Image 1 (cartoon, one colour):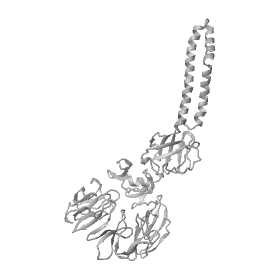
Image 2 (cartoon, rainbow, N blue to C red):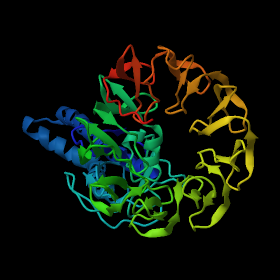
Image 3 (cartoon, rainbow, N blue to C red):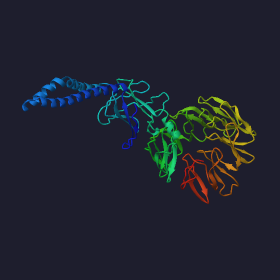
Length: 518
């Protein structure tokens, strides 16, 4: 039964939930017994008053008055009063012996290694039907290392959790409609929920995080910020030094690095130490020692592109630093979301195809030019040196046949740059013009906006930003030296020999560095 929720501000480390635990029939039974008992007691008290008045009228002597009252009270109210008292004493053990409506407080710590209960003894059973055996009691919260709670619904919805009583498993209490930021991160899909919905927002030159409704989740306090990864962490900067925070805004790794750390789904981020690269966890511990000349971030399948030295070939390692695909390719790119990685048998151009995680060719190495797969499952390809470019699928078949255009790979919004007759526009995944060629220069879409130029390269004030519909989102006004938006939601622009950082609405945010990625 739902009794709402609240965030517990006095305990910054925790979230605080309230719930009523019990079933309806048990609660109604207790209420009925209580009403009967108090009704009997009330009747007894009223009867005593009436009999006192009668006794006063019947007494012939003042000294006999109270004897009459007592005698008549014994005769008329002995039975109901006796049963009322018995009912009250019966009610107390009954109230604590059956499953009853009671308020419990559940504190879930920041590290989510503990669940703290207060006031009443309760137990938790998870959806895997593994009944917890620990019992919690006492008037103050007490801590115990405890298995993490899991989701109650089969769909693993982050806004519903069920608590079950030890003795009566059919008795549950649901805490539903909890705001997304108040749900424990360990619930499946919730970390991904944060990475998909929380947006970096700048205010007074500082970055924080808001949800899609624009509500602040982490107040603006950082000199730079990067999106949350699906591992539940974000790299942010204080005084231009980068560290790592969790979704409560608490420092997991103090700011100390020159560049941001991009954590993969497995909770590891690449870091350069001296001239070599390795991987650290969110606490800064080296998980893969820095022995590589070049690495990529880990892909969704847990493999990272790696190269031991400049003259060595490329291969793929796991999170232990072990070679899963031996270093044998002269050129390669990380695995895409469709489970395929670009690999080439030459150092420059030619003989490129796609391999799977088992190091088998899925698309034979026959292409002269090839780019990794985009999120829409298409890869830019050119079969021979003098051919036109087009796009293939994961089977190596042409989806957009080669055309006399100059293409670029697809952006996350599903649009790819293309040039026709010296004018630039954007095509969709079917090869149709989504934004007709009209610009003299442009960049790929990033953060939903694309930098474009109209007019001569050296001309001032002829650059601005368009949205996915080709509409001007930030009016054309900037000079050369302007760049696309970075993952932190900022773009560096130049105007009248001055450089500054703007947000996606074109508002001035701060002076460079903007930390945009271009």
